[in-house]
Image (cartoon, rainbow, N blue to C red; front, side, top):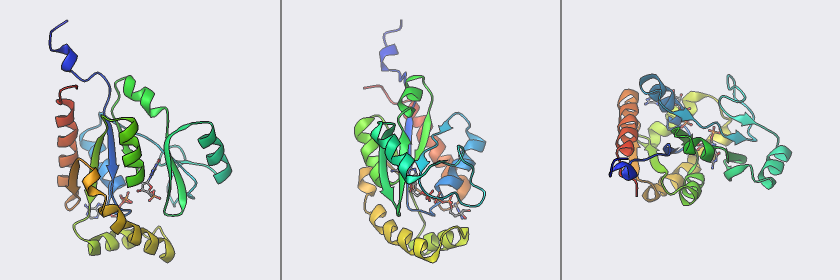
Length: 197
Ligand code: ADP
Ligand code: 5GP
């Protein structure tokens, strides 16, 4: 046993990625996976209906409102929240994965991010911001996955979410995709060198 071993992180990292709907969280994570495959994405649970092309168990675990309530009552979520009119929850098993030394990236809204940081204080909080609100709207509309009502709701929520940036530890602007993924990778690598408290 070396004297400095006690300062080396033995759990995996829990990386929380938040940012307004349409900013590019899923796209950036897909890009990161290509250049840095050493992490797992935590598949969360939602009552939202799947979008075209979304796969159950890959993008989300898609369940009914009744099933969501039952799982919440059984304590199967680390946190859950009402977001843009649907329920979303982080599975409690993610903590076991961390103990096994696996890094997890979790895309959750700001309420979820703040709640998880209280439960897992070592979680790394990263906020992804758009280059501008106009560009955010272009991306959200360009995705063509939400109704007009949903787009309006998500854009309204975006302003509130941007106000929560001070709760986060890192701010990355998603302008060029390659640069954004590089910055995310750099944060993860740096966090691995952080001295364990
Ligand atoms: P989120 O997961 O944050 O809701 P998405 O990953 O679905 O956002 O991205 C929303 C839209 O923005 C998608 O059409 C995606 O192709 C586009 N997008 C994401 N990142 C960029 C980027 N850096 N530059 C231009 N368009 C982007
Ligand atoms: P979308 O419907 O666009 O996939 O996701 C809407 C929002 O819900 C995004 O901000 C996403 O990060 C967030 N989200 C996804 N899963 C969870 C979760 O388990 N908990 C919380 N609090 N938010 C989540």
